[in-house]
Image (cartoon, rainbow, N blue to C red; front, top):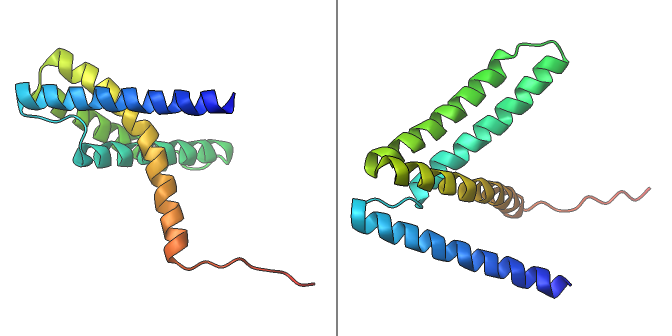
Length: 137
């Protein structure tokens, strides 16, 4: 059963790669614009991080009767980033391609933002030469 899950994941990744490749080739040929690139990834990933941190700050402020404005501002900044990306996609293509491409783009970048954040944390731990701590009592 594990082998079938691995094969399913690999097939899903391959199909996703084909869709990304087709979308980029289509929009590059027709509109001279690529949907899936590093610049848009960074904008969307950072926006997702702002929304996530803002939601956590908002929930903590509500629980402790604190100031909810910090969380709302972080969420707002994240939403501005996502709306900006939607606007750029529609501006550089047309309405239908821009909206459908943005939905696909946000879904792909949502997964990649989590993977990227984990990779950054692991790289930080690796390059900081962290060592395990042993307690010999």
